[in-house]
Length: 142
Length: 71
Image 1 (cartoon, rainbow over the protein chains, first blue to last red):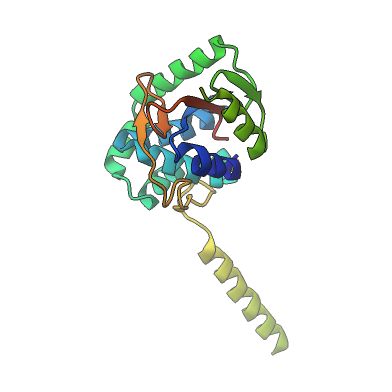
Image 2: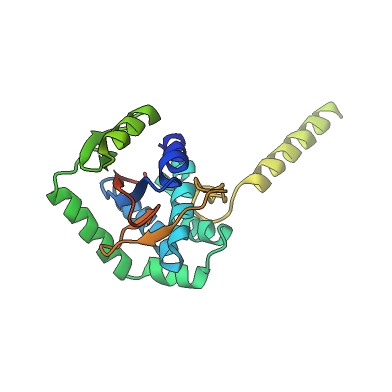
């Protein structure tokens, strides 16, 4: 999705056409939650930091799968975040409780496949080339 | 003499490999800071009432929700 996301951001988000939202799915064990918690904790400091952290994790997914706490803290440090605040958030319960709630909401909505995209109400299951997104976005435009 | 030289080279190679490994206890190299997707672009960032994060104009005509796992 990284390359496709880059094209969507450049051609549709930056132009004001699309607001892109990330909704975490917590299906693959403890590190699903840990990675999401880390990204959301980055966002607690500044919403822009969520996306920088999100991008960092997706660029390094093989490491994320086996990562432990130190990996997420080190990533926060590398990205210039306040690591004291990050660690307090990451080790706390609040963000994890929120993530569990978000995950429960998407399950209740019947969202099961990873990834799933809701583009203005149209559902795309799985990964798709940029051209597909461009077409669906165009269809969704008022 | 040759054996000693080969042994020395092997030890040096091993030392070089050990020095390159991260020591954060995770068995993984911390992600470094890549350019964010929106580098160089004028992008608005925010947070929805449900706690999710967004990028793009809050009032954009189309909302794209990416449901995915970081793994």
